[in-house]
Length: 80
Image (cartoon, rainbow, N blue to C red; front, side):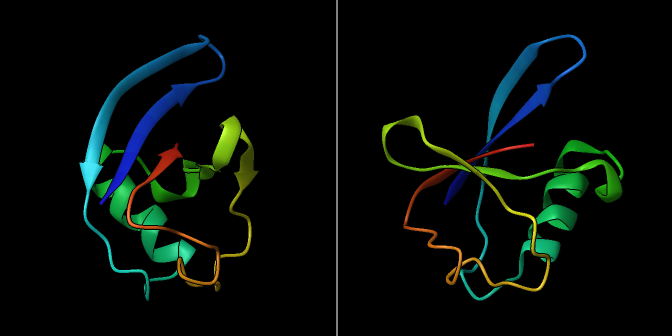
């Protein structure tokens, strides 16, 4: 289970949390497509940032990496 929040950088707003189930064997590109489908936005406009420990944010910028390789745990928060 991951928690997805939509963040609008231009308006400086943070949307509600959306819970998603996605396998750790999925790639970052597949995650972006799943997020885009749930939030009804274009997947090309989705940028994913994972929140690690102590609010450390890390951009997921390699589309071919799996979520497991990116270090996803049982519950992670992803900002779009």
